[in-house]
Length: 293
Image 1 (cartoon, rainbow, N blue to C red):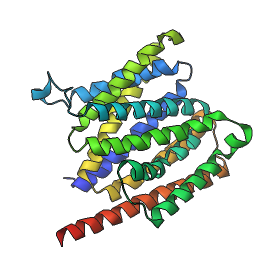
Image 2: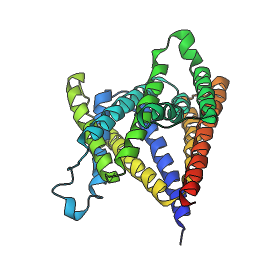
Image 3: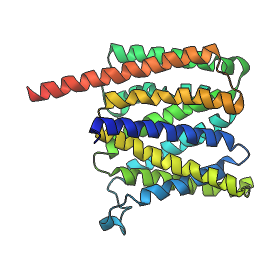
C-alpha cells in the first residue's frame, strides 16, 4: 500500500509525462490551424472532468458564487494557452520548456500587487537570477528580432495570474469546476476560428488531436491530486523532468540540439524557481509555528 506522499509523487510524475506528450503533439500539429487544435484541447479536455462531477451536482454543476474571478482566470488561461501553442510551433521544444519554468518568477511579482504579499531579499534575488536566465535563453531572438521568443514569456505572465486566481478560487470552488470552466472557455474561443479553413483530419490525426485535450485535462487533474496528497516540497522538483523530456523528444523527433546558452539559461531559471519555492516553504513553516505558539 502506497503512502500519500508516494501517491503524490506518482501523480506528479505522470502529470509531467502527460504535459510533455501534449507539448509534443501540439508541436507536431503545425499543419492544422491553432484554432482547430484549441477546439480539440477544449472539447476533449472536458471529457475526463465530466466523470468527476458529483451525482447531486449533475443539473447545477456550473453554478458558482465567483463568476468574475472564474472569468479572469479563464481569460488569463486563454492568453497563456494560445501563446504556448504558437511558441511550440515556432521554437525548439527545449527552449519553450526552459522559458516556461520562469512562471514562478512572475507569480512572485504579481503576488505583491494582487495578494499584498511581502517579498524579501531572497525572492528578489531569485527574480533577478530568473530574468538573467530568460535573457540568456532568448538572446538569439533579440539578436535576430525573432518575435516568437516573446510568446513563452507571455505564457508565463498569463500562467502566473492563473496560479494566483486558482489559489483564491480553490478556497471555495472544487477543482473539477475550475477545470471545466477553463476547458469550456477554450472550446468557445476555438469556435471563432472556423474562418481559418479548418482541415479534415485523417483517423490517426483525429486520434492525436483528441489526445491533446485528454492529456491536458487529465494532467491538470493529476497535478491537483498530487498537491492534495503529498508535501509540495517533495513533488514540485519533478516538474523539471519536463526539460529532460523536451530535450529527448526534440532531438529524436525534430533533430533539435539545445544550445549551450539554452542549457545555461535554463539552469538559472530553474535555480530561481527553486529559491522561490524553498523560501515559500520556509515562510509557511514559520507562519505555522507562530500560529501554534
